Length: 262
Image (cartoon, rainbow, N blue to C red; front, side, top):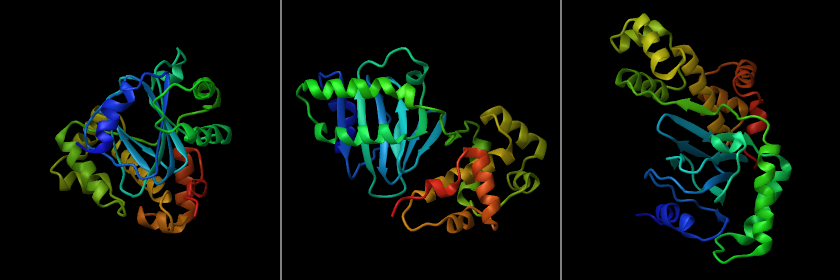
């Protein structure tokens, strides 16, 4: 078992502290599903991370946070390396709705500075009063600093027919497909394919294709050296303005605002 898998399953929940800090500049990902007794705040300092649950996949771009509730089974992955993660774990979280669901969100400046400040306590297993007071204060401001979750989430299909379709779309992300074209390729009628999409993942074929392209674009924007123009081309947009407007409609932010810092 990889070092990080041992860390996830044993070290965090075994440490007898109300809150625990782990910063890692070269995070090692494991395909193993796991859950923590503690709530987890993840901040992506560099690179990007995918967070997988049984029914959905969330993208955490550079300088974004995710909150994972206690007991939520998940696994993580990333298509780029290295990935610098700063993680905070809390044994109690309170009753606010924020703590009950997975949330991916932009990191406010004050929260980012507070997370960076916790580096001095990374992997510290002994009790430290100043550390615990600071972390409890950080935890209390999370619901206050959180404005809205960013919809960087793809629903995961369970029907094998839809799995085949979405796999093909992901492998051919630069292409723009019409429903009749894809339905015929997978021996489905358009009506049947649309019904399966709505029933299995709750959105239309066109809606899924658009969301897939925008989430892939958000991933690419977190990679050093990419530009808005290059990313637009890679996900099948010939017009940068059309890409920017679609990106804004889906995520509520412009692609320029998600470009990785050089």
